[in-house]
Image 1 (tube, rainbow, N blue to C red):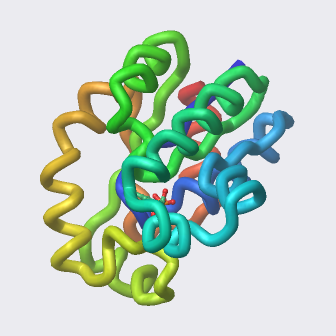
Image 2 (image 1 turned 180 degrees about the vertical axis):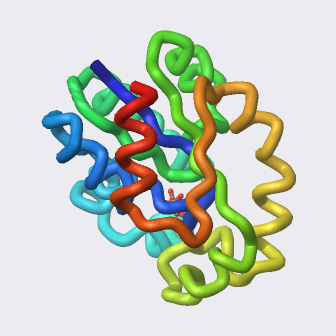
Length: 158
Ligand code: S3P
């Protein structure tokens, strides 16, 4: 089974994905991590090669990740690719949402070039919200809730 976590940056996809994979007894795959392992830090990729290049290497890692029997956590923008949108129809897709107040503490580490601050995060989320909602089979809000509780809720649904 492949269960895919989508959602905006800082919605907890990696943290919750790891816990969920343990609960379900399957592997955990994080597309951002696969990219970093092969190509180095994400801000450097954006700065040196630009977003289109990042999206094409991201697409390659998405294809690889969707072949695995795992919980797969996507980078927030991985769903922008039309081929990825098409591929997701064959998988269980969970959207993680989060309120801005809960995001503030998670930003500011310089690891997310597209969301330097909360205003940028809100703008990016608003632009993508309808797409995230269209692709999701199930939605869970992660604001102010323990990782374990959220993972258990998703595992019950899956
Ligand atoms: C991005 C989200 C990031 C990372 C890259 C682009 C986006 O992942 O893939 O900085 O476009 O939303 P997270 O969602 O894990 O922060």
